[in-house]
Length: 144
Image 1 (tube, rainbow, N blue to C red):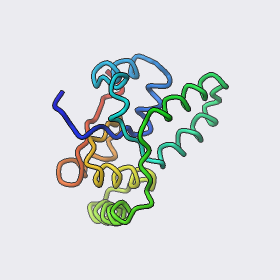
Image 2: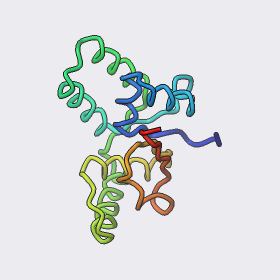
Image 3: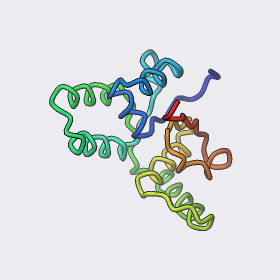
């Protein structure tokens, strides 16, 4: 893997890591996340999503504790910065003009990736239209 400024983990990547399923194991092994968590970033938007998803999925105390432990090892990127707010507006506009609707949380995550320069790891195709020109993302096929 080439050296990067780090990875920004999309919400779905953290869910896979917490579940420890074959997808999570493959992601962890391929990108050596367990050994490089100090380089991994997460948007505070994903943190909120993950807490909500944990409740929606009915995760018990043990899994929620595992989630909290993993989140404590990641670098949280706050969205309360002028650069991220501007990037949000830009990505919102680009997406609408290209006919690609994105959820608001995905726009915040994309803006965070753009501003930090981190490579976005995701299993979603929602960021495809931004790849290359606005951010760098690695799409991981969740079905492999």
